[in-house]
Image (cartoon, rainbow, N blue to C red):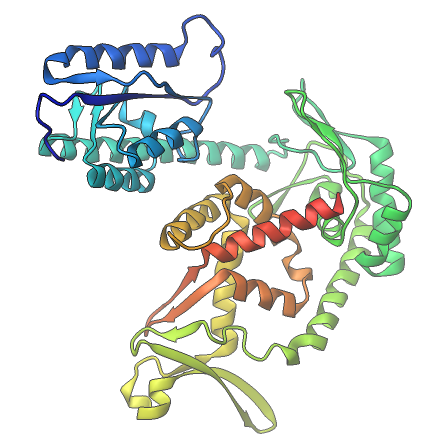
Length: 454
């Protein structure tokens, strides 16, 4: 960090944050207490030329796990504009609880010559010992956050294994008994759910069912949150129908990570009707896959590379005994012989399966998806990516996984090409890079589709 002459005032910004917005309307709240402590510390350094900036940088009700906070963004803007020399916080975790995010902040502070001071931890990053202490504190802060996350996930898993309702938006056909914390059947909506299952069994296509639902004026689930926020129903589209037909809640079950447990709530759909519908879904999927498989050519064309030779891998076909085989071949190996490259070639079906499996793990895991988006955004810094929050990405993309198997193969291929920036094949592994701009484009497309449907 740079050292400034004492005759120049050290402009100090006090940043304050609390995760909960409870009691923020009281006469003296946690934000006030943090700011008072920070200003007292700044005043104690008056002989060093420290002066408090009058602007307030207070984030009330914001998590430290993301940098998407209004006051923090305003502070970072002032840092970039060289209006701040020192940032004072009550504790380091008030600024960030993520090592990855804090590394970005530390890089900015270093570049702009900004000192960071923690009042309660006696930390000043203008010294080498302060920077070492900072790294240790951040490691423990992230460890604490991950432990809390693990406890929450363990609690959710244990609750679902017991068949209990774990919160969130109820599906069509059920309401929430908030006192008992369980799902109860909404008879009017339940009859609509049964109607959808029966009509799909008769018609055999989600498109026709969707058309009938909208023609009759039916809408998706409308509900009010505990805080009184209304989430109005919308017009139906095929995705809504597929998600409904695949939801094991209607069998009286609770699902967690692919496993189904008997639920406390009452079933709406009989097992025989469920089986009939899913036999049709499976038959439709096989038929669509057979019709379009020949048009796919190479799923990873243009994005798969040999990491050993640092060159492209091209799609190739061979036919033996009347059967066609697809594979990707290293360009250098094709030019210089197989002995020149340990990667050489690999089965197209196997590597495409690996890439799709990894994509689906990202799609079905909010934690992995949010982390992937942060890392992809960092890699794509300076590129034209749309400004969506991590939660926007999670909410939009997570709707894809339940209906993935019902997408046409060419639509699956389009999504893979949109999301995957590059596949690097090493002799012992394959690495998949996600495109931040692809995530942004897909989120925008999904959100636009929802808005049009509404």
